[in-house]
Length: 142
Image 1 (cartoon, rainbow, N blue to C red):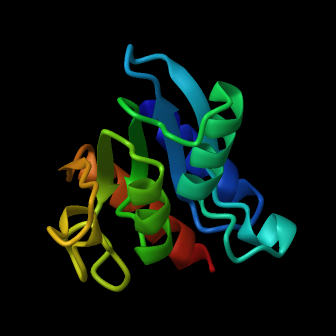
Image 2: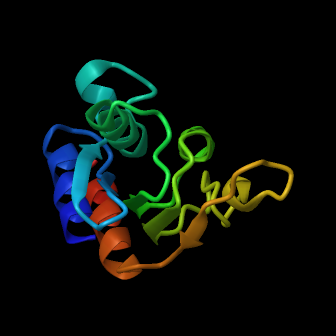
């Protein structure tokens, strides 16, 4: 989560919402990182999770990220949860809950929906206060 928080800080420095993500291999090695780049690129899909998943899949040369873990500072939204589900990630670890758009237990629970063919493990609330403080500080400055 420390690396994800650093990624989130990079997003804030470029004027984007501070969300950071780190994709780990099954052995726990860093495969890819990402932070929000929506403002930087004018791309509504440039969320931290999507970028980390894309970069990891490119590095592995495979869209299936079986056994991998995604660590993210904010609960994934529906778009990111869909990308997580489609990439067959093993586990998602997130910090702060997102009561307005979270799709991993807060507003929706797409990642654990029994109707889907793949459901990653979800670990919520890791360094939650620290992740939430980073977001709160950013929005206060705005």
